[in-house]
Image (cartoon, rainbow, N blue to C red; front, side, top):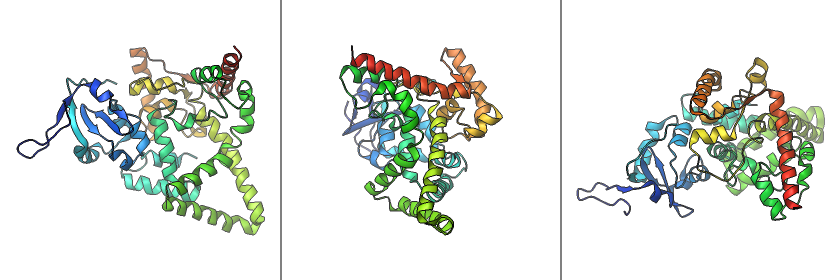
Length: 366
């Protein structure tokens, strides 16, 4: 059937499509998706999406209901704006069953008002941390949308330094691709990973992002951060002393940040999009570190990474409350729920890099 047209009474007539028909609309210039059995054409609107064009486009041709519910707290309000994008309904639709304060604000999980969350996020990540809030949303929303999915999760797009998972190392090895000695990546990770992510890559990508997007609002917050830094520390340390002190702090923070954020993802499945439903996708690519007073504090409750990914707008003090419910749900349906010690979670980063590097080496020399 064609797209919805106008009925005789002037109202818009909606088309009826099969799931298979929607699946074919997953191109850059032709994007449909399903939410609660309704079909929306987001081809031109995706660029206006507050969460970013990429995060919504990753679900083109798919049922995005679970992701939509997980990301939106004010669903009734959002639905008002979605009506203009609706072009049809699905035929015989069957629903599927299925440093961290800035992180909390970014997930809209502190205040009931989204506007307050956005303002707090701008202030904390911009004025206190010296980064772009829009850059963070651009990357982080894609990560939550499709964690560990190649070409969709920017957090794993590090192929020219590290190869992750089982598929990519073998694929690159057979094609003789790669410029690094990946069979040693578990060792040079300690030199190129935790020490350099925030001091080097963090700054380069941030500035590239704001200038490319002409995001002068975020640039203003970042500029205020560095003016504050200079005003506070230069009288004590001098300009170069302030610079090197700042880079030292970033390097120490970078170690903490990398180990805490990557322990729950790098050792898990890294693959092309298999179109898994929301729950199976999050459980396949995410794992927890055991709850404890220290672990909860040290990781900012990101040791409950499974619960965080299933319910990204949930305030983090509630993760421990829903954890037993999630575990029982997984047990009931035979879904693997991974929960390790903090030490094992850290160690698995090393061992997974070693395994992936060896897979590349073996494929390269076979």
